[in-house]
Image (cartoon, rainbow, N blue to C red; front, top):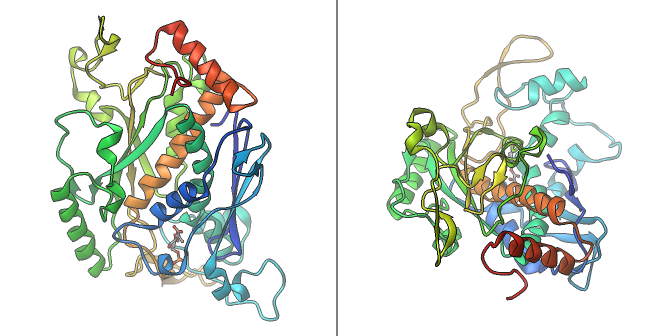
Length: 395
Ligand code: EPS
């Protein structure tokens, strides 16, 4: 749920390209094409990706709202070309072709195929699956790069790590993570911080892939440096937890989200479920635990915001599931397409982008400002008023 920003994606998986539109950013924000492109590369990587990723070389092409590397204050539009389109021109052309391809008639269980065909009156499953495809997440990450640049200017960083692949989980942390702990995580084949768990995850993907399975998992996103008071307790749609949960659950194949200790809190006694409040000269008002995941009363607390997302195994299988032929109603095997076996490492990057967009939106809503310096000044004034850490503009 976006309030002060608008974020729209457009595009089909094998069409000419994807587009992201971000409206509501202040002027004067510096963007760096290399930094933006690095996020696009991160989303393409990870053990378990399929053949398509060898074709695509995702990069951002900014077509509006930016001049000489700085935002102008107007809508920012970004295009991500689909290199694979050249192989699909006859099948995905926006304009009539001499001979239309055979329509897809076998819906895949778990995908948008069947319900989409009903709902949109499609006579070809492709009319549904092309937009439902997680290829669309490339546009989310492209839009997210703008939000990340905005947050970085305000001292806020968003990171993610994979915490589960299939049944393989990471060990519990012995100390809270810092931004520095995430250094180099993209060099790990599953974007996991624990070397031993990473090896077991890679092995699990390799074994399951050979057995024609797809594999799900979970990742964690952490937001460092966000001020207290983003979101609001005053109205249900303003609550930051709900806004983040909606954004995460809107990502293809996502089936669950939890904040802080999340579902484990259901079993934990009240005395061990909350983050007690302390005060000291050195640290000011602070907490020593973060069971809440940095959210109380629908607002950020100033601690790291920590959420975990569950991703189901992707529904396109190399060993197709049972389905029906929509023409005859007879049993048939679901569409079998080239596919990824595991996208959880990439999903973490998409989760970062969606979280960045929501946190950026909350900052825009709370602090306003037409130029990035106005935003920094407003954040500084607020920090001063509540006595919260150091100034943003001070360096
Ligand atoms: C996807 C199927 C695969 C994935 C795709 C999502 O594409 P293709 O059908 O071309 O092999 O690779 O994801 C991406 C292309 C991407 O960029 O993430 C699906 O059916 O959802």
